[in-house]
Length: 404
Image (cartoon, rainbow, N blue to C red; front, side, top):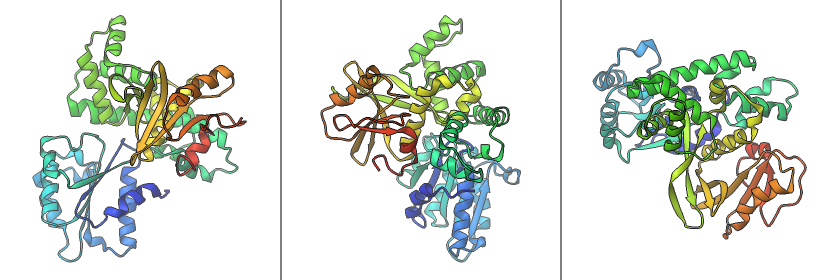
């Protein structure tokens, strides 16, 4: 196991503070392992095992916890009467009404509370209003390229370019590193995870009746990652394929996929008009390996894959990300954090003057002093252009900050 330092850094300021710590993210992205590592760190720092209460809703051992009352009684029964208690609950969304139990334990100051959940609407139910202002959410993602390389260090003489192709193909789910990175093995493993997510986090949670349509919509969104689209366009496409559906159904199903972290939506922002646009958003896959387990891996998709990887990396680094529109031109990413903005274009290769012009022109039209960058797979560079930084995608992914 590798220590996912960025997440320890994010959660450390809140340890032993009277707020609930929530780690949310895609199933099998590493939340459970991180929770166990956090418990081990507490024990190493002097916390006694009797002061730690652990519940995992993925284990048969805790199948008896069927509602918030049972959860509350179990926790209270196992809390130590001496010292600070720590409560860890993995996959909290599996317990109906969990908010009531957790809120009561927090109000009683009975334990320092840590939760994981695989649904982005973890706190959207009516009971969750009980917790308003009483929790911090830490988004967890599949492995970054840097973390992927850490897992691969057992291999001798790593070739960064070859490793990057493996990363693009297989994605960042930590579990793939238990196997040889071969298509027939890894994609079978990832396919089983995808099926579990669809069943548990979408079909069962939202009582989806038309599973065939759900799978078709998921495949369509995966196939069009990074392309401007809308629920109406998707509905119209399916109608042309003799598949009946409506705009509202498409919107709902995409929303369910977002809740399960299978896809992520990037809204659009009009840089000239300074306003958010309500139509024609972009979607990106929560993990490229899952995308390829559904669609198959095609090297010709490289430009879109690079864009997807950069998008996830920006989210991983804490940026709010949207797509920019300037007149009839497009800026791939407007990344904002703490009031600072970065504009980023992503391309495969800048082989021609036409390609270079297409990527640089939108950034050159933006009349502000925020940093601007064009990322590509080029390894031989000309000079930066009008203050716009050129950088290799792999170099960008392996840096700690955007403008290192």
